Image (cartoon, rainbow, N blue to C red; front, top):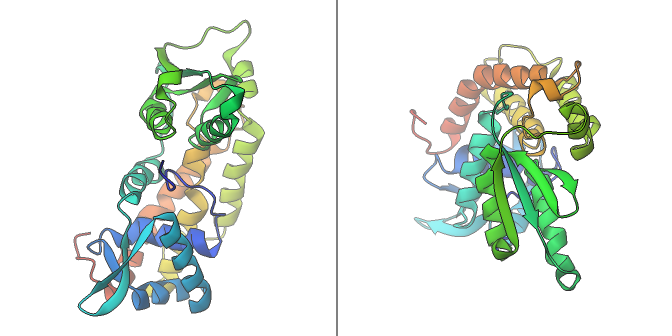
Length: 280
């Protein structure tokens, strides 16, 4: 069973979360490896001390996100083999915010896990929750159809695929407005709070980056790190099922604007420290 599949234990803004964000953004582009000194330098640019970074490196190595690796006699870290798929999925989630149209299909996940395997049942529910699934009932969860493959992976990873049935369905037919049911299946207040928190954190960030590379890099990294959990928790529900004052649209637009503005300058700074090619 994978220990790193969509691991969301790291709190945004923490040392481990910032390091994971650097790994996701840059380590593969640098040939899948960076020296310890390079990683320490990048973390110092976001005001994290070398001691805290070394502790986070050890933690991520134990989880399998990183592998200790030496190149040409230089100590460093490579992307863990089990982490590659997770990082690729993160690329799609973080940088390509998705939203359902009114007529898009849904996926229902029905499962039966006995009390004797309640530990597995807890893990399944936790991981479905962390990819943005909603709860119709204890053994029936729901999500946009485009999350079905990720739900399948979770079931396979936990050894529970034979205890589950997945249905692709059209728009659910509920007794009242679908928006009322959606508000029962998902904690919309929590999701809206995540979007509003992100908007508040980024409110005073200039639309154009400074010319000083390390400062632009730090701003960009904090932006990505603050945003990265939202596309996992928020599945991108249809607009007509959400409250009129839903902040998700503004949040996504603000993220994309800052990402597009800051990414080139941040990358140039990382390239000055590492071996990422200019076309990355």
